Image (cartoon, rainbow, N blue to C red; front, side, top):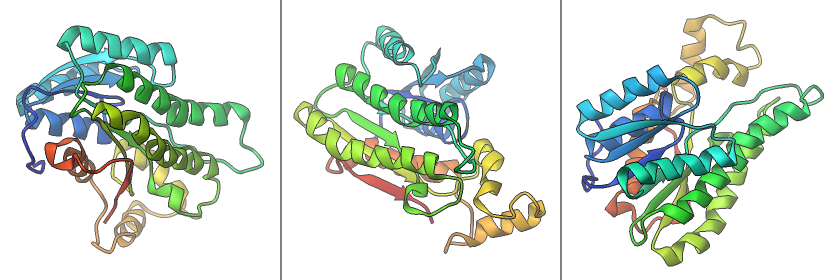
Length: 259
């Protein structure tokens, strides 16, 4: 169950990359607090529509809007459609992102551009559209970093640096959003068990593709002093605080969410 802060009834939240994983957990948690949620998705309308129905069952309202979160024009259209439908936007959570692993000497320009195009450029322009459209005096913006920026992982410098850029972004953007009465922060999840994580987490271990599923999960468990892997709801509960009334004095920060 999501944590309980001030209810979000009457609030409108836009979440990019909300059809699966952590983004889906955000949408469901926001819906359970009474918010109306704009479910952004990239390609699978059926999956996004399923999340819409789950948000409604949780107690909120929702619509699904397709947009490529690395396209500036798509991002602008996403916000325009969301505001046209609901009349306002109070909360923006930029969750869409792509993972990257490759040998340093084999990483291509196309790989670099794809990673930075979504993780940095896309998030910058989501923040820009939030600046243009979000409700003043109480609006909330949350971007997505990663604990990878704090680590030293082979074959991972493109991804880690793209996430590190977000911390600098929010630290500076609070000076832009502050006069509007809007906070902007970042969340940096640790290892979280999502379908995307399961596709990529083995690359965090030198022998990750050679070990059994049981050994793999045991290593994930041991990474946390709390003795378990993170779940999408763990991240959603922290973000609920950031977007709540109670989170209104947290600004320009990167919140690490890892046990």
